[in-house]
Amino acid sequence: MAGLPRRRTILGAVLATLLVAVLYVFGCEPRYGGQLVTPAARPLIFAHRGFGDLGPDNSLYAVERAFAAGMDGVDVDGQSSKDGELVIFHDLSVDRLTSGTGRVRDLTRDQLLALDLGPKFDPRIVGATVRTFEDFVIASQGRGILMVELKVPGLGATGIEARAVEIIQRHNAHANVMLSSFNPIVLRRLKRLDPNIRTALIFMDTNWNPELIAEVKPGDRVDLPWIVRQEWIRRGLRKLIRPDLLSINHEVDSAVTRRLIAKGWPVFIWTPNDSAHIRRALDLQPFGVISDQPLFARELRGS
Image (cartoon, rainbow, N blue to C red; front, side):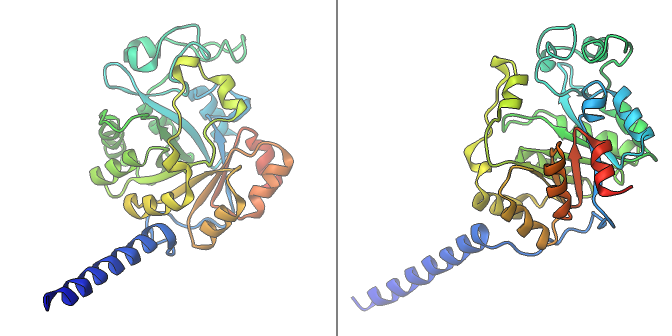
């Protein structure tokens, strides 16, 4: 019986240590310690989906016009084709934005590059075809920052991270390309492949809003897991995956966004589009704002 008090003492110490660890992981928000992002003198203005509402969705045609208009950067979406190419396209299926049909992952590179994003945006625009991630990397060099959301709904490896890293390394594009994702596993894989890749964790507090639901084909809906919609869990995820930036939906509790900015995090706020929401985002002095109305956002910021 003499050993019982000792065992209780050891058990108590172990439980206390575990409690402290849990409180630190999920309750503590240490100051940002990243080294790859240089603070900006004023919030950067990024054009959402290429050039927001001013150009064909996720087209190089729109991106080139965004840079010509003086945008600090552009935000687009990347997916893997059937044959493993990384292409820039927003929806999981091509039906809404082009005259084609089918899912991006079921179409080859050549089939996707033959699709034109222009006519459904404006019948006068012809030749704004789907392009590869590499095309966007080349076009953005020396002109502005390219942020690409990698869309990987599941946890399984797809090879998309390796393809993205390979292209960035080949073009020495670390300084002007950022890779973002809602999926923390994707960001973890990117950092393991190349610690110098700049990554951004995207998050929101809700699952779907009416605007997004209206865009999504019924069979393409992918729910955002509950765990990544909880800020206390995201605290732990940030410590685990160590993203370089955060991309926070403008509808997230402003107290959360303010706290993260105060801790030194480079924060993008997406997608405020009307005057009140853009002003509110800019007032927080984030690292950047991603908007469908980038020219208006820049005007409100002050050129």
